[in-house]
Length: 111
Image 1 (spheres, rainbow, N blue to C red):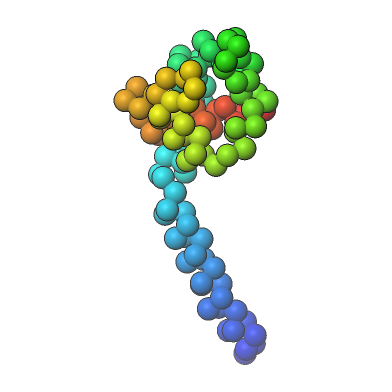
Image 2: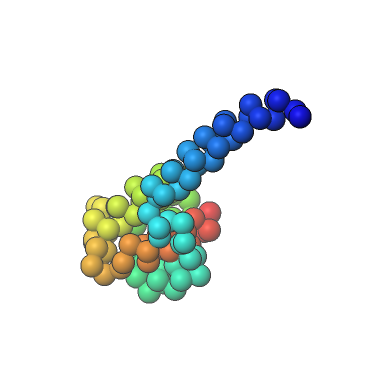
């Protein structure tokens, strides 16, 4: 019997358990984000200012197709959409969290 394989089992189990623990810490909606639904929501709620393809139509709206802000993790971006930032109004109560994650997943495809 190969003893080195036995020695690796606890390490593999620990790594698997750690990864599983990290996944459970993520919001469920981040794991199940739907960019197709995100596109529909984006065109309804966001395109008026940010443009249909992410190139803003208003001077104060960032170009999402080239935005450095999207280099931030999903929960940070979602929180900004929830609470609003600068001239963008808050979407808390307008969109559910899973819908905001859908929008973020779609917007990330615009790059």
